[in-house]
Length: 336
Image (cartoon, rainbow, N blue to C red; front, side):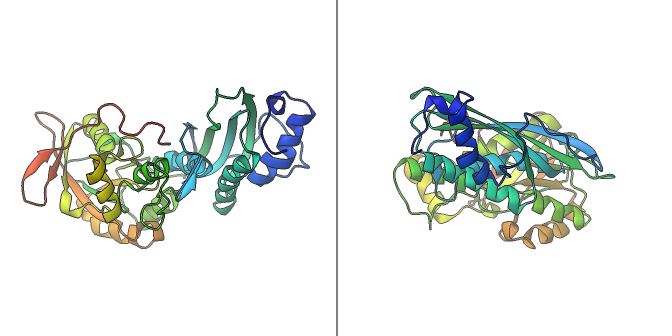
Protein backbone atom coordinates (compact mmCIF):
# COMPACT_ATOMS: atom_id res chain seq x y z
CA UNK A 1 0.00 0.00 0.00
CA UNK A 2 1.74 3.16 -1.24
CA UNK A 3 -1.14 5.58 -1.71
CA UNK A 4 -4.63 5.98 -0.30
CA UNK A 5 -7.52 4.73 -2.46
CA UNK A 6 -11.23 5.39 -2.09
CA UNK A 7 -11.65 1.76 -1.10
CA UNK A 8 -9.61 2.43 2.03
CA UNK A 9 -12.61 4.34 3.37
CA UNK A 10 -15.27 1.84 2.34
CA UNK A 11 -15.37 -0.12 5.59
CA UNK A 12 -14.17 -3.45 4.14
CA UNK A 13 -10.91 -5.35 4.17
CA UNK A 14 -8.90 -2.46 2.69
CA UNK A 15 -10.22 -0.12 5.34
CA UNK A 16 -9.19 -2.62 8.01
CA UNK A 17 -5.76 -2.87 6.39
CA UNK A 18 -5.34 0.92 6.56
CA UNK A 19 -6.22 0.91 10.24
CA UNK A 20 -4.10 -2.11 11.19
CA UNK A 21 -1.03 -1.29 9.13
CA UNK A 22 -0.92 2.51 9.25
CA UNK A 23 -3.27 4.39 11.58
CA UNK A 24 -3.20 2.32 14.76
CA UNK A 25 0.56 1.66 14.87
CA UNK A 26 1.31 5.32 14.16
CA UNK A 27 -0.96 6.46 16.97
CA UNK A 28 0.43 3.84 19.35
CA UNK A 29 -2.88 1.99 19.73
CA UNK A 30 -2.97 -1.76 20.36
CA UNK A 31 -4.31 -3.26 17.14
CA UNK A 32 -5.30 -6.43 19.00
CA UNK A 33 -7.94 -4.60 21.03
CA UNK A 34 -11.54 -4.36 19.83
CA UNK A 35 -12.13 -1.23 17.74
CA UNK A 36 -15.14 0.57 19.16
CA UNK A 37 -16.77 3.81 18.05
CA UNK A 38 -16.69 5.31 21.54
CA UNK A 39 -14.89 4.85 24.83
CA UNK A 40 -15.97 4.49 28.45
CA UNK A 41 -13.55 6.43 30.63
CA UNK A 42 -12.71 6.27 34.31
CA UNK A 43 -14.41 8.60 36.76
CA UNK A 44 -12.81 12.04 36.93
CA UNK A 45 -11.31 13.67 39.99
CA UNK A 46 -12.49 17.17 39.19
CA UNK A 47 -14.71 18.95 36.71
CA UNK A 48 -14.58 17.75 33.09
CA UNK A 49 -13.40 20.18 30.42
CA UNK A 50 -14.21 19.39 26.78
CA UNK A 51 -12.99 20.91 23.53
CA UNK A 52 -13.08 20.18 19.80
CA UNK A 53 -10.78 21.38 17.04
CA UNK A 54 -10.07 20.96 13.33
CA UNK A 55 -6.81 21.17 11.39
CA UNK A 56 -6.40 21.96 7.69
CA UNK A 57 -2.85 23.32 7.49
CA UNK A 58 -0.87 23.33 4.24
CA UNK A 59 1.75 22.03 3.80
CA UNK A 60 1.12 18.95 5.93
CA UNK A 61 4.72 19.00 7.21
CA UNK A 62 6.90 22.01 7.95
CA UNK A 63 9.96 22.92 9.98
CA UNK A 64 9.15 22.11 13.57
CA UNK A 65 6.08 19.95 13.09
CA UNK A 66 3.20 18.68 11.00
CA UNK A 67 -0.57 18.58 10.96
CA UNK A 68 -0.25 15.73 13.46
CA UNK A 69 1.80 17.90 15.80
CA UNK A 70 -0.78 20.68 15.56
CA UNK A 71 -3.68 18.27 16.15
CA UNK A 72 -2.23 17.21 19.49
CA UNK A 73 -0.86 20.55 20.64
CA UNK A 74 -3.82 22.63 19.54
CA UNK A 75 -6.28 20.38 21.34
CA UNK A 76 -4.45 20.01 24.66
CA UNK A 77 -3.61 23.72 24.63
CA UNK A 78 -7.29 24.62 24.40
CA UNK A 79 -7.83 22.53 27.53
CA UNK A 80 -4.80 24.03 29.28
CA UNK A 81 -6.05 27.58 28.71
CA UNK A 82 -8.92 26.73 31.06
CA UNK A 83 -6.53 25.32 33.64
CA UNK A 84 -7.35 21.71 32.75
CA UNK A 85 -5.04 18.71 32.67
CA UNK A 86 -5.47 16.79 29.38
CA UNK A 87 -6.61 13.18 29.68
CA UNK A 88 -7.92 11.83 26.38
CA UNK A 89 -8.36 12.60 22.69
CA UNK A 90 -10.48 11.37 19.83
CA UNK A 91 -9.07 11.70 16.31
CA UNK A 92 -11.06 11.92 13.07
CA UNK A 93 -9.33 11.74 9.69
CA UNK A 94 -10.65 12.84 6.30
CA UNK A 95 -8.05 11.56 3.83
CA UNK A 96 -7.81 12.42 0.14
CA UNK A 97 -7.43 9.53 -2.30
CA UNK A 98 -3.92 9.55 -3.72
CA UNK A 99 -2.22 10.68 -0.51
CA UNK A 100 1.18 9.07 -0.01
CA UNK A 101 0.82 6.52 2.79
CA UNK A 102 4.32 7.30 4.06
CA UNK A 103 3.29 10.94 4.56
CA UNK A 104 0.10 9.90 6.34
CA UNK A 105 2.05 7.58 8.60
CA UNK A 106 4.59 10.31 9.40
CA UNK A 107 2.04 12.92 10.50
CA UNK A 108 0.12 10.35 12.56
CA UNK A 109 3.37 9.24 14.20
CA UNK A 110 3.94 12.87 15.22
CA UNK A 111 0.53 12.92 16.88
CA UNK A 112 0.93 9.51 18.51
CA UNK A 113 4.41 10.20 19.85
CA UNK A 114 3.25 13.39 21.59
CA UNK A 115 0.23 11.62 23.07
CA UNK A 116 2.43 8.89 24.54
CA UNK A 117 5.03 11.37 25.76
CA UNK A 118 2.43 13.39 27.66
CA UNK A 119 0.30 10.52 28.90
CA UNK A 120 -2.81 11.49 26.92
CA UNK A 121 -4.84 8.51 25.67
CA UNK A 122 -6.28 8.37 22.16
CA UNK A 123 -9.53 6.61 22.98
CA UNK A 124 -11.63 6.72 19.79
CA UNK A 125 -11.51 7.87 16.20
CA UNK A 126 -12.85 7.70 12.68
CA UNK A 127 -11.39 7.49 9.17
CA UNK A 128 -13.02 8.63 5.95
CA UNK A 129 -11.62 8.86 2.40
CA UNK A 130 -12.77 11.38 -0.23
CA UNK A 131 -12.05 11.62 -3.94
CA UNK A 132 -8.78 12.97 -5.26
CA UNK A 133 -8.96 16.77 -5.37
CA UNK A 134 -11.61 16.96 -2.64
CA UNK A 135 -9.52 16.77 0.51
CA UNK A 136 -6.10 18.39 0.05
CA UNK A 137 -4.16 15.54 1.64
CA UNK A 138 -5.70 15.00 5.05
CA UNK A 139 -7.89 16.98 7.44
CA UNK A 140 -7.81 16.12 11.13
CA UNK A 141 -10.59 16.71 13.65
CA UNK A 142 -10.12 16.12 17.35
CA UNK A 143 -12.03 16.21 20.58
CA UNK A 144 -10.14 16.61 23.83
CA UNK A 145 -11.17 15.77 27.38
CA UNK A 146 -9.43 17.25 30.40
CA UNK A 147 -10.09 17.74 34.07
CA UNK A 148 -10.03 20.89 36.18
CA UNK A 149 -8.52 19.76 39.49
CA UNK A 150 -10.65 20.19 42.64
CA UNK A 151 -10.31 23.65 44.13
CA UNK A 152 -8.76 25.21 41.00
CA UNK A 153 -10.55 28.31 39.70
CA UNK A 154 -10.73 28.21 35.91
CA UNK A 155 -8.98 31.13 34.18
CA UNK A 156 -11.52 33.32 32.41
CA UNK A 157 -11.68 36.77 30.77
CA UNK A 158 -14.11 37.88 33.46
CA UNK A 159 -11.28 37.57 36.01
CA UNK A 160 -9.00 40.05 34.19
CA UNK A 161 -8.54 43.11 36.41
CA UNK A 162 -7.04 46.56 36.02
CA UNK A 163 -3.43 46.35 37.17
CA UNK A 164 -2.91 42.77 35.97
CA UNK A 165 0.41 41.99 34.33
CA UNK A 166 0.50 40.18 30.98
CA UNK A 167 3.22 37.57 30.51
CA UNK A 168 4.25 35.63 27.41
CA UNK A 169 6.37 32.47 27.53
CA UNK A 170 8.58 33.16 24.53
CA UNK A 171 9.19 34.46 21.03
CA UNK A 172 6.19 35.43 18.92
CA UNK A 173 5.25 34.57 15.34
CA UNK A 174 7.42 31.46 14.92
CA UNK A 175 4.66 29.21 13.57
CA UNK A 176 3.34 31.72 11.06
CA UNK A 177 6.85 32.44 9.79
CA UNK A 178 7.60 28.72 9.49
CA UNK A 179 4.53 28.21 7.31
CA UNK A 180 5.58 31.16 5.12
CA UNK A 181 9.00 29.59 4.61
CA UNK A 182 7.55 26.12 3.96
CA UNK A 183 5.20 27.44 1.30
CA UNK A 184 8.11 29.23 -0.34
CA UNK A 185 10.06 25.97 -0.43
CA UNK A 186 12.72 27.16 2.00
CA UNK A 187 14.26 24.71 4.47
CA UNK A 188 16.17 27.04 6.82
CA UNK A 189 14.65 25.36 9.89
CA UNK A 190 17.58 26.41 12.05
CA UNK A 191 16.40 30.01 11.72
CA UNK A 192 12.63 29.68 11.34
CA UNK A 193 10.82 26.75 12.89
CA UNK A 194 7.30 26.31 14.24
CA UNK A 195 6.90 26.67 17.98
CA UNK A 196 4.18 23.99 18.10
CA UNK A 197 4.24 22.49 21.60
CA UNK A 198 1.83 21.51 24.38
CA UNK A 199 1.43 24.16 27.07
CA UNK A 200 -0.16 22.30 29.98
CA UNK A 201 3.24 21.84 31.67
CA UNK A 202 3.71 25.60 31.83
CA UNK A 203 0.21 26.04 33.21
CA UNK A 204 0.86 23.46 35.91
CA UNK A 205 4.09 25.27 36.82
CA UNK A 206 2.14 28.50 37.37
CA UNK A 207 -0.35 26.82 39.67
CA UNK A 208 2.36 24.89 41.50
CA UNK A 209 4.06 28.22 42.26
CA UNK A 210 0.86 29.51 43.87
CA UNK A 211 0.11 32.08 41.17
CA UNK A 212 -3.46 33.40 41.04
CA UNK A 213 -3.95 32.91 37.30
CA UNK A 214 -6.70 35.27 36.17
CA UNK A 215 -6.77 34.40 32.47
CA UNK A 216 -4.86 32.36 29.91
CA UNK A 217 -4.99 32.49 26.11
CA UNK A 218 -2.98 30.83 23.36
CA UNK A 219 -2.54 33.34 20.51
CA UNK A 220 -3.02 31.08 17.48
CA UNK A 221 -4.80 32.42 14.35
CA UNK A 222 -4.51 36.20 14.30
CA UNK A 223 -1.66 36.04 16.78
CA UNK A 224 -1.25 38.19 19.87
CA UNK A 225 -3.16 41.07 18.31
CA UNK A 226 -6.35 39.05 17.79
CA UNK A 227 -6.12 37.28 21.15
CA UNK A 228 -5.66 40.50 23.11
CA UNK A 229 -8.36 42.41 21.22
CA UNK A 230 -10.83 39.66 22.07
CA UNK A 231 -9.83 39.69 25.73
CA UNK A 232 -9.86 43.50 25.96
CA UNK A 233 -13.40 43.53 24.58
CA UNK A 234 -14.61 40.71 26.85
CA UNK A 235 -13.08 42.24 29.98
CA UNK A 236 -13.79 45.89 29.12
CA UNK A 237 -10.16 46.95 29.60
CA UNK A 238 -7.24 48.39 27.67
CA UNK A 239 -4.16 46.20 27.37
CA UNK A 240 -0.95 48.18 27.05
CA UNK A 241 2.01 46.35 25.51
CA UNK A 242 5.67 47.33 25.50
CA UNK A 243 7.33 46.71 22.13
CA UNK A 244 10.82 46.52 23.65
CA UNK A 245 9.68 43.67 25.92
CA UNK A 246 8.04 41.54 23.22
CA UNK A 247 10.37 38.69 22.20
CA UNK A 248 10.59 38.21 18.40
CA UNK A 249 13.38 36.21 16.78
CA UNK A 250 15.52 38.16 14.26
CA UNK A 251 14.67 35.73 11.45
CA UNK A 252 10.94 36.15 12.11
CA UNK A 253 11.30 39.93 12.25
CA UNK A 254 13.20 39.84 8.93
CA UNK A 255 10.49 37.69 7.33
CA UNK A 256 7.82 40.13 8.48
CA UNK A 257 9.75 43.14 7.23
CA UNK A 258 10.32 41.54 3.84
CA UNK A 259 6.68 40.52 3.33
CA UNK A 260 4.93 43.37 5.12
CA UNK A 261 3.60 41.13 7.91
CA UNK A 262 3.08 42.07 11.54
CA UNK A 263 4.64 39.63 14.06
CA UNK A 264 1.82 40.50 16.48
CA UNK A 265 -0.63 39.08 13.93
CA UNK A 266 1.32 35.91 13.09
CA UNK A 267 0.05 32.61 14.48
CA UNK A 268 1.70 30.85 17.39
CA UNK A 269 1.19 27.20 18.37
CA UNK A 270 3.32 26.98 21.50
CA UNK A 271 2.80 30.31 23.22
CA UNK A 272 0.51 31.48 25.99
CA UNK A 273 -0.51 34.84 27.38
CA UNK A 274 -1.01 34.81 31.14
CA UNK A 275 -2.83 37.52 33.10
CA UNK A 276 -1.81 37.59 36.75
CA UNK A 277 -1.99 40.13 39.60
CA UNK A 278 0.98 42.49 39.76
CA UNK A 279 1.97 41.02 43.12
CA UNK A 280 2.31 37.58 41.50
CA UNK A 281 4.19 38.73 38.38
CA UNK A 282 7.71 37.96 39.59
CA UNK A 283 6.75 34.50 40.85
CA UNK A 284 4.84 33.77 37.62
CA UNK A 285 7.78 34.86 35.48
CA UNK A 286 10.15 32.63 37.47
CA UNK A 287 7.73 29.69 37.17
CA UNK A 288 7.55 30.06 33.39
CA UNK A 289 11.31 30.43 33.07
CA UNK A 290 11.82 27.25 35.11
CA UNK A 291 10.41 25.24 32.18
CA UNK A 292 12.21 24.76 28.83
CA UNK A 293 9.28 26.24 26.93
CA UNK A 294 9.33 29.33 29.12
CA UNK A 295 13.06 30.07 29.11
CA UNK A 296 12.45 33.30 27.17
CA UNK A 297 9.34 34.35 29.09
CA UNK A 298 8.80 38.07 29.47
CA UNK A 299 6.43 40.63 30.91
CA UNK A 300 4.71 41.93 27.81
CA UNK A 301 2.36 44.55 29.19
CA UNK A 302 -0.24 45.59 31.74
CA UNK A 303 -4.00 45.98 31.98
CA UNK A 304 -5.43 49.50 32.27
CA UNK A 305 -8.92 50.92 32.61
CA UNK A 306 -10.77 50.45 29.33
CA UNK A 307 -12.95 53.55 29.49
CA UNK A 308 -14.13 54.94 27.21
CA UNK A 309 -13.20 52.11 24.82
CA UNK A 310 -11.38 48.79 25.28
CA UNK A 311 -8.18 48.85 23.21
CA UNK A 312 -4.82 47.20 22.72
CA UNK A 313 -1.99 49.72 22.63
CA UNK A 314 1.75 49.45 22.06
CA UNK A 315 4.51 51.59 23.50
CA UNK A 316 7.06 51.73 20.69
CA UNK A 317 10.82 51.50 21.08
CA UNK A 318 10.96 55.23 20.30
CA UNK A 319 8.73 56.01 23.28
CA UNK A 320 5.54 56.76 21.36
CA UNK A 321 2.26 54.91 21.70
CA UNK A 322 -0.02 53.52 19.03
CA UNK A 323 -3.13 51.39 18.79
CA UNK A 324 -2.47 47.77 17.81
CA UNK A 325 -4.71 47.01 14.83
CA UNK A 326 -7.03 44.04 15.02
CA UNK A 327 -6.38 41.65 12.10
CA UNK A 328 -8.66 42.12 9.11
CA UNK A 329 -9.03 39.35 6.56
CA UNK A 330 -6.49 36.55 6.51
CA UNK A 331 -2.75 37.20 6.37
CA UNK A 332 -2.03 33.49 6.01
CA UNK A 333 -4.92 31.12 5.28
CA UNK A 334 -4.68 27.43 6.23
CA UNK A 335 -2.23 28.18 9.05
CA UNK A 336 -3.35 25.42 11.42
